[in-house]
Length: 320
Image (cartoon, rainbow, N blue to C red; front, side):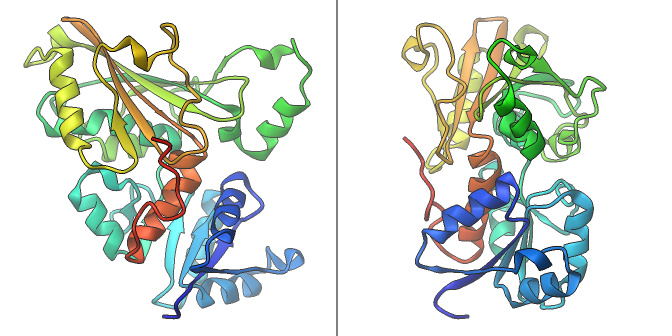
C-alpha cells in the first residue's frame, strides 16, 4: 500500500458524506479519489473509483449501498457503510469499538464495516455495559427516548428547517417514528445483548445538531435492585481509558447547566458523554453525542483509523 490511504466517498453530496470528505481533505495521510459530478450515478464510473480505493465510505440510501457493495471486485478494498443496510449482518463488523474488545478487534480485521446509527450509538453506549455487568437481564424490556437536531433528517429536512421563519410550526419539538418501527431498532436489539428492542420515541428539535438518548430504569423492579452508584460504576469500568467516551460524575450538579442538560455540548467532537441520574428506586441513563460526529462521520473515520492501524483519534476531536 502507498504511504497515503486512497479514499473514495460514494455519496459525498449528503450530510455524512460531505463531512467525511471535508475532514479527510485536511489530512496529509489521505489521498481522496473524486468522481466527475456528472457521472456520480454511473455504475461504471463508481466501480472504477470503488475498486481503486483502499477504503470506500458508502454514504448512501440502503439500496444504493447494497448496489455499491456489488460493484466491488477488488478484495483489498475496505468498505465502511454509513447506511442501515449492513448493521445487523454478521458478515460485517459493527462500527462501535467501545462496546468491547471483540468489537474493536473485528473492526481492525474486517474489510466490511457498518457504521452505527446515531440514536443506536447513544442507546448502546448506555445499555450494553449494564447488560454485560449483569445489572440488566437479557429479557429486560426497556424504553428510551431521544432528543436530536434536525440534521439527522438529511438534506430535505435541513432545508425545511432552515427555510422556516421564527415562530412557525417547526419551532416546537416534534416526536416522530410514532409507528414504533424506527430504522435503528434492529441494531439496538442485536448489539445491546438484550432479547428485545426498546420502545423507542425520538423527538426532533429546532437546532441543527446534537443528540441525547435517555433510558429510564425502575431500579427496584430489576432482579438485583441496583442503585444509581452501581450503574455508574459499571459504566465507568467499561469506558476506562476510552478516548471518546467519558462517564460524568454521579450526583454532581456541575455537569448540568443550572439544572438543565445541554444536548449540544458534544457538538463538533467525536465524544460521547454518559450520565447517570436518579435515586434509590429510579434512574435515568443519558448519553449525549454529536449526531454528525460520533453518530455518523466521526465514527466512520474512527473505524478507518482502526482498520488501517492508526491511532483511532487521528483527525478527530475528543473535546475533553
